[in-house]
Length: 72
View 1: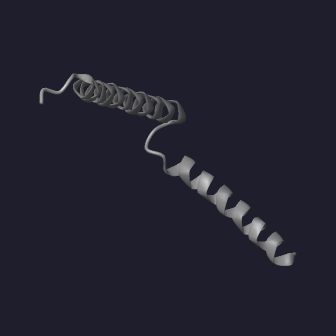
View 2 (view 1 turned 180 degrees about the horizontal axis):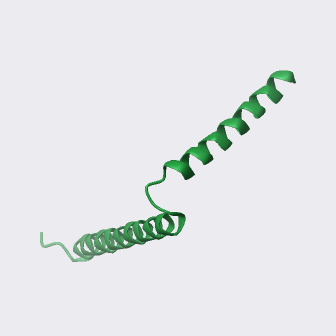
């Protein structure tokens, strides 16, 4: 029981130290940083959607090719 409490106390202290370090060492203010993160997430989502659309078109083309009657 004592080991668990010690571990949790250490984890909490580490989390607090990490949060303070992140705030102090961040290259931009909170608003700027959130905006940069939001912009990057939007870019990643757009890339993911485009990749999904491309893959879907490719698979639909393959499916259409498989459905065509084969000349023997």
